[in-house]
Length: 196
Image (tube, rainbow, N blue to C red; front, side, top):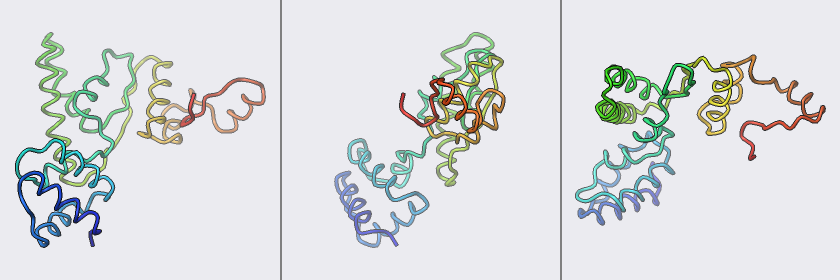
């Protein structure tokens, strides 16, 4: 059952976008969004009030839900620039990279970026419509130091857990017992998830 706050936010947003929803229409709209956490839907409705011109649709809200996937420009910026670079990416990013790579191989950087963005946006929309959470995976580069930095950054951003980072690079990340020994020896250790 949708909360009163959610139903009110839907009604107000629809009205500000130019259409008044009846109570049953607002309930159906809320039902269509029920697979998403209410806080994310409320935040997306806030964005809709600022951005949507015209009749509010479920797709307007879904496309603005922050589910942890990077936007198309950020996703493009995260792509590996050579085989040495390790990347932690979503299935949608990997799929879009597969579309862009042949264009990069022939020197068409602009075409590659445009193809990547279009394919990525379409894949993210399909995943969100299906209610699939982002699935983060590691693509290993040849540089061990870069691998460690990529895993630490992904763990800091909450894309993978500390345990996953350790599983992906067991010989490059100290175990919890190893961290304690290093700290006892006076070595300054940055813990994943801590502030510098």
